[in-house]
Length: 109
Image (cartoon, rainbow, N blue to C red; front, top):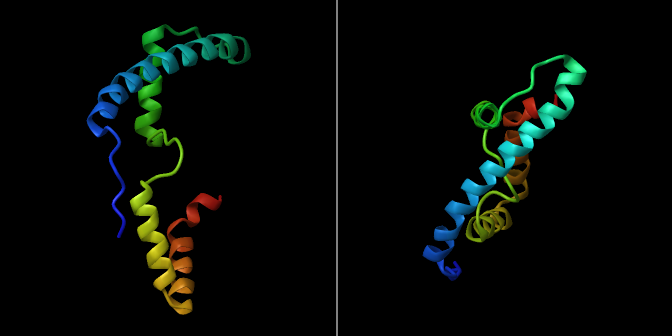
C-alpha cells in the first residue's frame, strides 16, 4: 500500500477553516441576492435579510446533506477500492453491483 505525502497538512487546515467560513458568508449573500431577485416577483414571497439567507443555507445543509465538491474519499481510499475491485472474481463483482443498485435504487426516481 502506498503512503501519500501530507503536503503541509497543518498549514492546509489553518487556511481551510477560514476559507470555509468565508465561503459560507459569500454563499449566504448569494442566497439572499437570488431569493430577493426571483422569488418575490414570481411567488409573491417577502424579501429576506442576510441572516435569514444564512439560516436557509444551514437548513438546506441539515435537510439535504453535505455540500460535496469533487470526489469523496482521498487517493488512498480510491486506490484501496480499485485494488479490492481487481481482486474480486466476476461473480463477486456481479453481486457487488446488484447490492449497490439495491441500496441506491431510490436515487433513480
